[in-house]
Length: 178
Image (cartoon, rainbow, N blue to C red; front, top):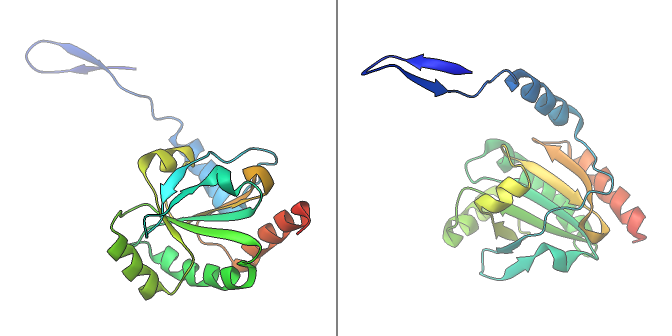
């Protein structure tokens, strides 16, 4: 819609209508409460470096079940969830590829310090704006469980009971026949 601005001459500016904000908030709330499945939708490919500089490409992991956890070093919920994910990592590390994708720092020393403070050992990938946009990261933590061929099995927005994430992993392993 148009808004009239007062000043040196009359100027009309086009402003974006924000009527859909309530609907977006409602949908996000539903997703947080229930998580959601995507059936056969493929996860966007990415190429990221880990905290040691090693390059990881998602498409190279297409034959594995993959867990991606988007987190931030300053996120309190992440600091509670990552040690729980570490328990799953220890249980499934021979069958599932785990990656924590940090979105608020590129500093390897800061990442390693945070891993030690929080208490998890699985690899950290250094995220960027393109990956955040592709994966629609609106906050942290957000966890993706991917099946064979990098198909999205489940997305969890916000901290989740570890049993729900375990169920999603088990379901993908069953589909894969592992």
